[in-house]
Length: 219
Image 1 (tube, rainbow, N blue to C red):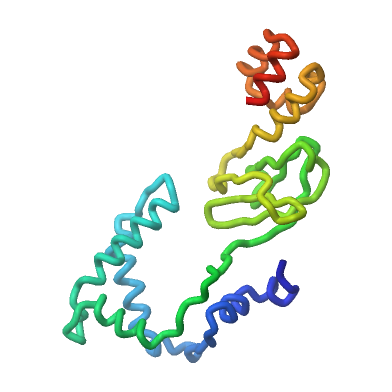
Image 2: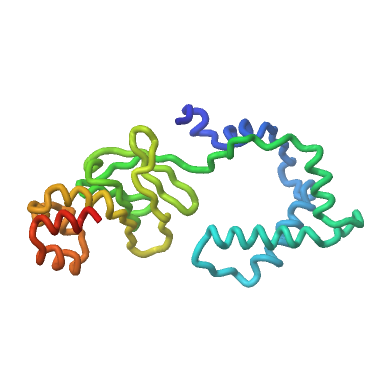
């Protein structure tokens, strides 16, 4: 998907995508970027105090964007104009953005166990693929909030919410597993898939005949 150089130097891909060059300050010369440091402090004090708590990162990011846009309606401390108007003037001098969005994902090849699962980032985090990938290696696309195992054509096998925290967690997409079971319902008890099903579902399937089991698993 990327050349070796691009994988090793992700900032090079970023600069090539948006067509800009890096300009660095001198070492131990914080005064050269004091205005930037001041803006960081402004956002920390006004948007992250007290420390925010949220359940969904994407929703919180949208909230931050809305708050930032609203904040641009205040008057700039030096130029006697709203920040939003000054921003529009700056935009007129900038290069147009690329039509294709920059891919901020990380890609990693992982080993899938005999149950079609793999671990990522930590031994505590487990994600599913599909039974056909058991014992193989798959490429995984990783973003800040999603983990997406990909097939040989880089199409998603499943889409998972990315896990965080210091406790054991698992993300399962049961559809590929239930589809596999529906083809051989009589062999369900001898498959590793059946053992992974919740107890209530196991008991329910045990009370059905083979035809009903297949129909149930296909739904």
